[in-house]
Length: 196
Image (cartoon, one colour):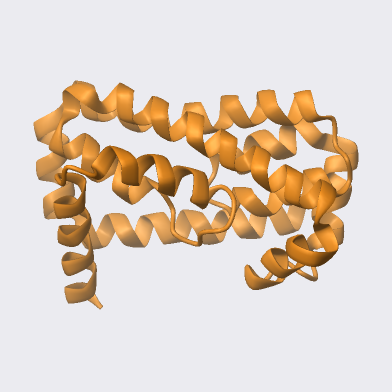
């Protein structure tokens, strides 16, 4: 497993240095918020490591296109829940919890969206849920923009300020950081199950 993590990280770093890295960031930011199971954080982090002075530009693009992907997911839930939305929800293993997630949007649209947009839980599932229950779109949009921007701009800030030191730390602790990421992902999923 450890070799896989190192090779995967190195592959993402190489991809971040390619001439198509901005296009990839835009596309994957949109897809990550709508259908893709792969978090954009790894590519964004690699791009910030490669060029810390561009971190805020990268984070802004990731935020913008991630929110646009969230809007796309909201539309899937609103218009195509039976044909597409349920497939995506079930693909991510949230079929059973979906009723609970949906009711959270009926009662706590802003906070549920904000938490899902900021945390490593599948934001797309919550965005689809918001659309499925016709949650207030403006609340959804504002919470999505705040949560996604906070998540990605925090990343940018850290690389902009600590650049090379952070790069060295990540290079020396790839496996530990990957484990921590997945622990937070699992904790986020558990918290969503407990509170929603």
